[in-house]
Amino acid sequence: MRIPQRLLPVSGPAAGRIEKFTEHLNYCKGQIKNLRIDTHEKNQTMRYLLAKHGFKEVGTIYIEDGSPRIAFQLVQE
Image (cartoon, rainbow, N blue to C red; front, side, top):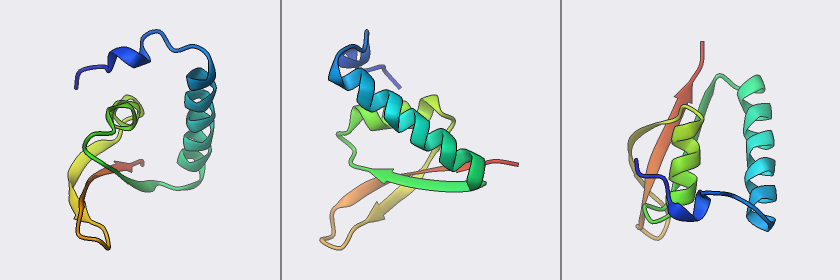
């Protein structure tokens, strides 16, 4: 996956949000061995962050209004 240019380098308010996301994700990874997250296909930042943290794209889900979301999963041993 191509790294979105807006992530390089990260500074200002975005850096704080990404840092907070990473903190929350690391906490969840310490508590739950099978994590699933979905996001809109255009959300390149989230897709990049999930891949960076070891999540694999596993398919497509459809939310209540019928619109698709890309499903990611991280299974830890």
